[in-house]
Amino acid sequence: MTNDTKHRTLKEQLEAEIADWERRCEEDPDYSYGGDWQKLIMTWHCYDEFKDAAAGTFDDALMEQARQLHPEWCGTPISDQEFAEFAKALGGLMQREAYAIYAKHDFWCTRNGITVYADGS
Image 1 (cartoon, rainbow, N blue to C red):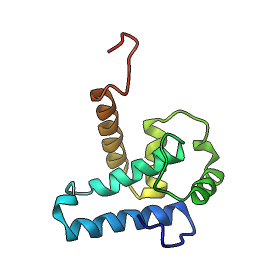
Image 2: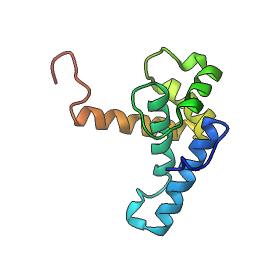
Image 3: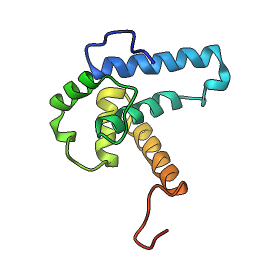
Image 4: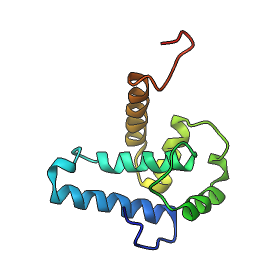
């Protein structure tokens, strides 16, 4: 998205990605989820890449820099509390917002069969 601009930190790139998405939503309302969903979703995508669960949007060097700055978030399973801390530090989200998108993502994974439970459901 904003790969043409050189950012100094992952937080700067995340802020630019959110601003870019919001600008596109103003130009084309069909692109918008409404409310602050763009900010929540981009912050989740950033966390997903930070945890090496996804790839694509964010600069690898900035991601590595963020991992060096926050080793406490490395090598641990994805969790709601950790995401809330990440979302506050890098995405500027409140805890309520962070937990809302975490729960929504968890629901999407369950509904789509990505999360599999011990009983096979």
